[in-house]
Amino acid sequence: MTHKVLFTGKTHNTNGRDGGARSSDGFLDVKMKQPHPAAENLFGAAWSACYMGAIEVAASQRQIKLPAGIAVDARMASVRSDFMTVSFVLGLSFGNGAIRALRSMLRSAR
Image (cartoon, helix red, strand yellow):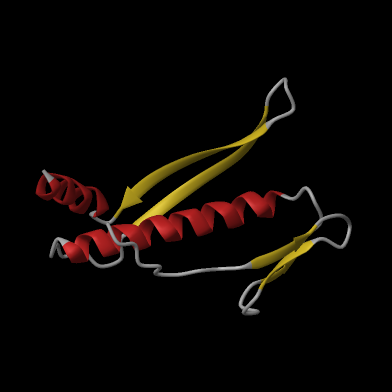
């Protein structure tokens, strides 16, 4: 199987009182103290945007027309266990006909 890179991204992150994140292309430049709940919001936004992009690519490859304005809602939570490890919990919900499109893609993949 041949892999084709569709998108890449590079960021530089700093922590502390003057913490923030900046992308190498300058499109993203966020100042936030660490820890900050905005980090979970950014992670959820980025992950769900990637997920929507994957849905669009898969639908296009299978010649499935997606409804206009599909939506993905992401819920993020940072969780610390007794062993001081941190994990992320991500929940997704779909709107505007995305579920029907996903079911159609799954049926066509069989």
